[in-house]
Image 1 (cartoon, helix red, strand yellow):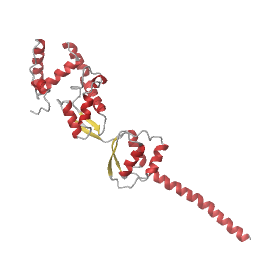
Image 2 (tube, rainbow, N blue to C red; image 1 turned 30 degrees about the vertical axis):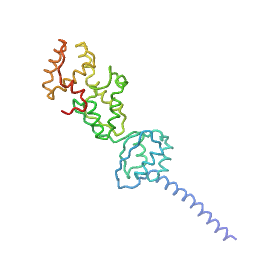
Image 3 (tube, rainbow, N blue to C red; image 1 turned 90 degrees about the horizontal axis):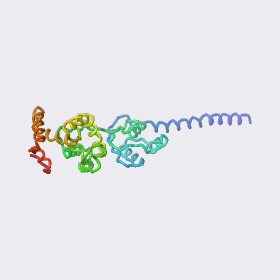
Image 4 (tube, rainbow, N blue to C red; image 1 turned 60 degrees about the horizontal axis):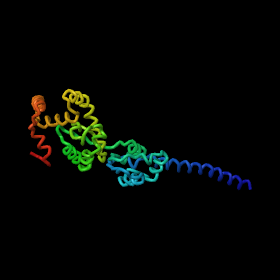
Length: 262
């Protein structure tokens, strides 16, 4: 009888030891699945999150790219952190060695891939749109529609129609799928930062509007590719304007010619 009780006691003791151990192992195993990457080789992947995508679609995209060890646990982690509605659209660079929480952080903070876009001096809106489309940043027609929309100029504090002449030539970093308005805002803000005060002063001196100054500056820029010649051309044009004479400038005619390439 005592032997049976002793045996039963040993059995219960082992059971009490094993059950917690199994539970702890189960918890550790699941915790590791939450935080471990797919592998440690670091294969780079490019994923594009469309605008308006649901979090379920986001998880599907990541899973199809092979960067999630467990889509279900990834979704659960996002829900626990309450960030399922904060994923930002765009193109992301992720890898199979990236921790799930790092991937999620990139999506939530909008750490998208950005491409270098060089806009040379003298580029028209159509040329800028073509360059952006060539780099896959945005659709050409979408940019043109936004740039020539009736309310676009007013939205950026520009008097008149359109933003031609206000898109500052510079080197920019844009991500694929960025909204046309965001690109325009960035370029107009750069223009206003560099030329805003100077153009306003010059307009007041010449009794002209800011837009007239921008148009005149654009014509002078198009008249010659040599910066050293521009002061002379500027003086000639200003004298003609004072006398009420036409500018007789080729760029004013060429601008209205569709797809001019000569």
